[in-house]
Image (cartoon, rainbow, N blue to C red; front, side):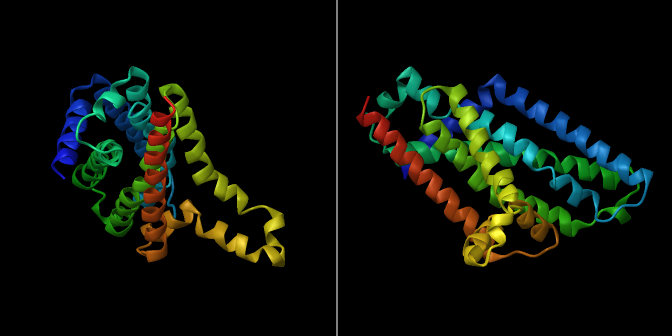
Length: 253
């Protein structure tokens, strides 16, 4: 357990001293800040259903599609390209410990970026005189969804980075996998062929994978353990595949 803690501390320290981390954080907050301002402007223009928090979290896919690949694409691909991964694994550490350390470091940064958006709601409640419009239910549910779903999204990024030694390819692969996971399943649910009776099981499986439906449930205060299990089991599977991918690449290198 001690080697894992050392690896995790090293990965977190590297993230904190890398200028790209602060550039990414600044861009993330700027983009999400403009999004939040646009939402408030639309609410000020005319009454709308729901709350600003619920609408804000509906755009969770923006950071997922663009920030997750940026956070994870260098994690393993760059190490393999530079040959430092092989050197690292000569130390008394396992492949699983290396992959998990990189996963938890990227996940911690992902959560930290989203935690920064909490300042938007603080400003709304503190200075805009809109406390009566700020429903804490969707706010808590939205951040809970971000934390739980982020396990799967970041692990998919780590998996993509484990499959190649080119960080650009890893970023593109992560983007494609996340796009298929979030948008692809939503598109599949609209296919007419799935309405056939003998494909009822497939249709039920596709409905189960609807990320936007999960978000709606969380922001309404409905926490379905099946959805939580989906994200936890999916992240475990992605990390196992990532570990196996790294080991397979090392054996053939």
